[in-house]
Amino acid sequence: MEYLYIIQMALVWILTIFWAYQFIVSICSLIKFKEKPIIEEKENRFMAIIPAHNEETVVANLIESLKNQNYSKELYDIYVIADNCTDKTAEVAKKAGAIVYERFDENKKTKGYALQWFLAQKIEEDAPYDAFCVFDADNIADKNFLKAMNKKLCQGENVVQGYRDIKNPTDNWITAGYAIFYWTMNRFYHLARYNLGLSPLLNGTGFMVRFDVIKPTGWDTKTLTEDIEFSLKNIIEGRKLGWATDAIVYDEQPTGFKQSWSQRSRWTVGHIQCMKEYTGMLAIAVKEKKTLMNFDGLLYILGSIPMFVLTLILILMNFIVFVAKGMTAAELGINILRYIIPTFIFPILTAILIMILDKKPIKPMLKGLLFYPLFLGSWLLINFKCLFKRETSWEKIEHVRDIKINEVN
Image (tube, rainbow, N blue to C red; front, side):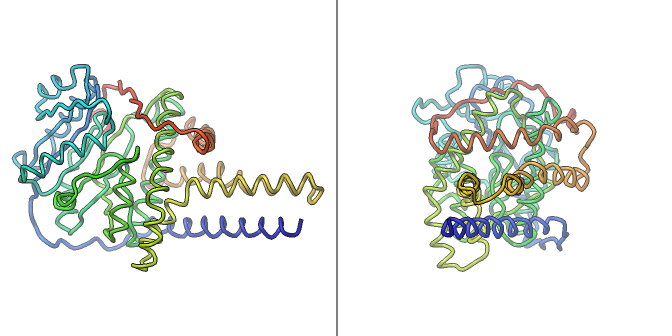
């Protein structure tokens, strides 16, 4: 029993130190630092790239929002990769004013493969672009998106994530859960790290990459979460990612629990794939480069599944001690509450704080706040399921909300 107690206390300290670090970093999102200086005043030339699979319902709204950017129209082109489409995505995109590339490959269906295929052609052409931005077909972009990203290029940034917002946050408790999760990530993860000089991460859509960055190897990703994989590869190389709060893109989230479960399962599996592929490389980078940025990247990859597993082990050990009469029922209850309160109660308080700071409407989100613990709890179940059963095939999430940019603004 003594050895069990020692192991238990060691796990408690590991988890405490990990979450204390995250808390200290998060506080830095509340501090406004001096903005980076402009290195070169220039209007850069962009590719706006939209990988799309059967998105005829929503893709035109994104194209419209991109055509109406507050940026010189001759300095950017809109490309749609109609990826294995069986509907009218290509036709709708062409009619809306995009340049369409059609791709058919039954074996390689993910967005990562579509980007790899398209960008390889642009590299071979030596296309005259300074950078490219990637959007999901269901997105709509704020009119100042490209202007904000151009400013980041002028400040010397190479890879920049924009502010990912939600275009349907009040549909139900599921979309509200996504909204609260992304608002939390935007401020307490991405902005906090950017303020500290650490590296944010790409977040699936609404990001910008300087074209020269990928010219040597192309877009070379192979996991289900190509955004996280690309981020980790840059961190390993010592390249810090940027963050643009005012480059806003609005994303549609699934309203059905089954679709949400499938989507988040894919993200968890992709995270596990990245963990297997890049944990060792990140550890080597920490040893060789000795930077806090690399260490923070290593903590990120260890911060989801491994910490979740440690928490499960700790809870199990508490039950073992209780069964062995090593603690009372009251002590067991208090120990369990130590894990439940940070997991389910603190996120609600954090979300309210963020909504106040970022001036988000709280009243329409009250139901979402109430059910946010259920959203997080279902994600824990997904993590547990993916420890034993992982689907690696890509499954499409249906996007049906016909929302235009003027309706979210």
